[in-house]
Length: 173
Length: 136
Image 1 (cartoon, each protein chain N blue to C red):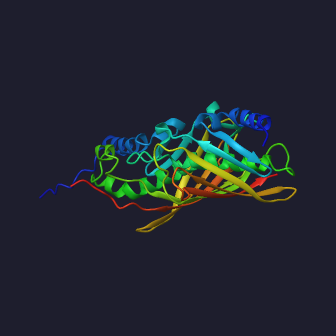
Image 2: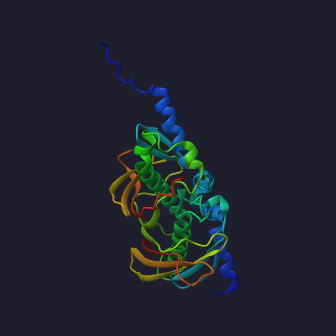
Image 3: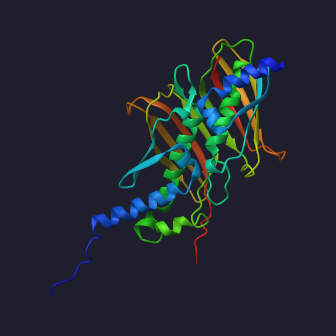
């Protein structure tokens, strides 16, 4: 007797669901839009991109990116990576949908407790990239490290570590 | 500070594009200290549920105020760069309220300035504090 194995989901559907969820997560934060930060995704791996813009300059003489812009960019990369890690299993299982994320109360972002930025080189007037790694995620606290680079992946211009308080999910229903 | 030096320093800060984008204003400074303000802006909210300003804006306010404190110190050069900055976020800023920061150089050597800063809104308890090392 032939056995019907469940067919894997078509790849386009999986990609569409992941990208729509990521876009919904990122799109609801006004600060991310104002800075112009976008995210690229490969599987569950995220890369944050801060396209260069004149308004990000903090030292017009060099010129160099403002340390506060770099700090904000790295913090966004860290908190989105952490939230993405929290919801990933639910997204894959279909328990969290892009529509859920439209309600800002539904999935709340972790709150930053502290953030320590190590400025290694001045930020050039170029696009910046960042990837974060969740080093520890418990029920209440998480520790996240993030690396920022521009032209060369091996020459970081800044790195940071932050601690976050997890928010109790307030899911509908 | 005399009015003219405050005007000059304000113009210097206003010429920094990112400080301008966030609406940062130098309100006062003296030898080795500075005070700045950042107005509330819904475009810079970090939490869609509450409208609280993103931590990155508070980082920028603290970083800029620390930098201004370093540059106003009599034993430092005309420019400075942040080496490292730790921010502790103690409570969310109240949406709609202006955030004020005060930074002071705790110690300055030939190469480094050690700086501390705190931010408040119209409530008295601090929103965030920063500890940083800057080039002097």
